[in-house]
Image (cartoon, rainbow, N blue to C red; front, side):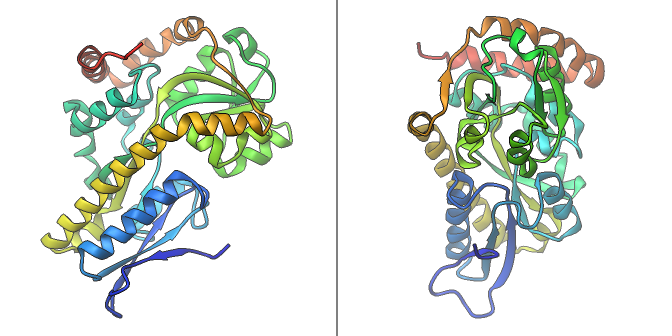
Length: 326
């Protein structure tokens, strides 16, 4: 595999400035497809002034390190789960509270129009990066090497989590023993018995082939987990107003593409993974919802009642306005 993938318009000027985009998805995954579209549109809308070089599969860094590289100016773009950015703005952990929304449309409304969340995103430039748009990954579910039908089954399992307090609290409330590790280490760690499984959206489970080593896919959809696309603030401030608008437009179009691609691919991905030997199940969700109830109180203790109530209120209003279709 080549060290990077470069996408630029055929008519790009020879002196185009190169921008580096790091992500941890495989070359065949939805993040790579959206990154290629983003790169193409950046080249097009800047009239070839910029060329985006894409580094997939964590070639430059895992997710936490990529965000650090944004701050240091080592890369220009990355895309990662919201909770990955919470290391630098802890209140973003609240987006990973369990069962905030039930549908993609509710999730899109939360990320695009929640007053509380937009206010949190507005704090990120002072941390060294900013959100351009939100790409899709979907709802987090489990893959384990033993069946997982209820929280009782979790008692004997070790679950990989990424460095995010809210996810860790939820997993521990369900009953798992948690092990923090970067996503790039997960496949081998399951294979070697270090952990029994992991939790991620179906798109990620499919792309990174976790079902090969943890074939029990349990569709709890316990956390909505999209992927904010971010740019280094130093890079952003180097753009002209015209190029800022061009990059914003490319980001918006790539987000729409990502959302449609991921939402429309879930059923076919599950079917393909089933053909490849995975066992897909939908458990009774009630016991899982009940198990995580203490997480909301813990969040209020750590992040304050006002912040927690703000996002819970926004999410409830969105669920009411956009009810799930049965």
